[in-house]
Length: 106
Image (cartoon, rainbow, N blue to C red; front, side):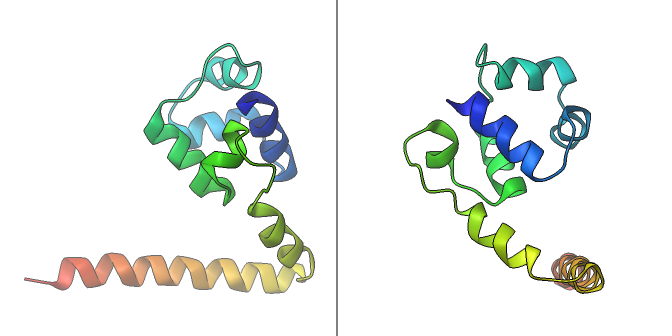
């Protein structure tokens, strides 16, 4: 079940197997293996996949048919490219701000 859903999410997000493999620090053959249900990602990688695609482990594992990323995808489709770029820039700023506030503490 995870293979089919992982492949679907990856494609819905416009990513190739190579891009996902690089993001997760695994090989492309590992991604293929997961997508063909020959193996499964370990727990930390499963969490990373869920965060990347804004979905739940229950959905990926087939325990639920509700995909939380559907709501985010629909919201993103309502935005213009300029608005998406602005949102991405703001997201990067917030991550930068979080990182710098942690390092500033004694």
